[in-house]
Image 1: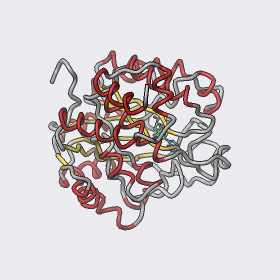
Image 2: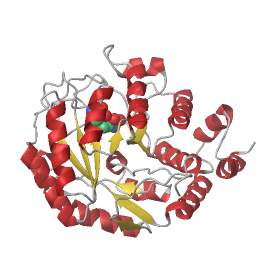
Image 3: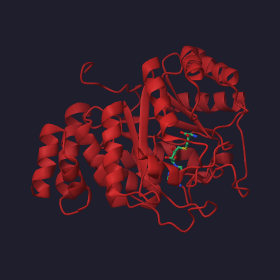
Image 4: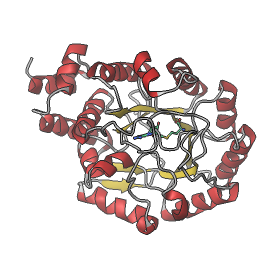
Length: 349
Ligand code: SAH
């Protein structure tokens, strides 16, 4: 089948065989058709709405040692920071004033924040902002911990699976981590009742087209509410310093494929996409993404949450993230909405 027909088949049936997926992933010939179909589908489900999530990067301490990540435990060059409970709450106050109705608390896996401290922070945010969604992105925990976070008032959780292939997973992570546990976490989170986000890096070291097909199949199995993908970007202070960053084109192509397969998903146009190209996030929206995540962290620590190099929105201008993104969203032909923006699902819509 010709790739153009493949794009149309995907739009009509939301499914392709492994071989067809490999084909569509490996050519840029018909990207424009894919982007147009994805944008059309996104407008059918979500109109021109783009949801904003205020991202609070509250610690860059991490007990893990993922080979790709700039805040890995063994990176002695990383200057570490933690935000106090009060500083986190101040970020939320500021965010609420700016119109944010979702707060995303993301960090390394930092044992300083015990379950009871996380629950205390979450329940305080829940009490002060009953009309907001609280999203956690703090890595792998036990089912009991996740349940406690949920009971404290958190309602969403972001945990990318990173890669759905065992061998590839082992190339990106030390032996102390496993794909099986990552998946266990994701299914526990879903079972508890969280809206769950998963995803992977595009162009991570050793990634093959078959790995990406496996990632798509895993997402079909998990059926997450949110799907976060962004290009892998090299960080000099990691074992992967000699690898090239992932490609914007492949990331955009995947956003479009995911929009067509998961019409109801919330798909962010990520900071990493904006980092590898000045118009990356606008192009991501045009390829089917419908979420942006401006940084709400205190300006002083933004540079320190360096998962990868040259991350945008970390300078003094960063306090204006909200306005800058709003203009970018408008210039791409969409509209920021401040609603909580729950994922629609086919049964709920
Ligand atoms: N500790 C949390 C948050 C991790 S940071 C967790 O485990 O979920 C959020 C995401 O950044 C990661 O899931 C990973 O996909 C991405 N990331 C890490 N290093 C990166 C790099 N070098 N380039 C691009 N994305 C990266």
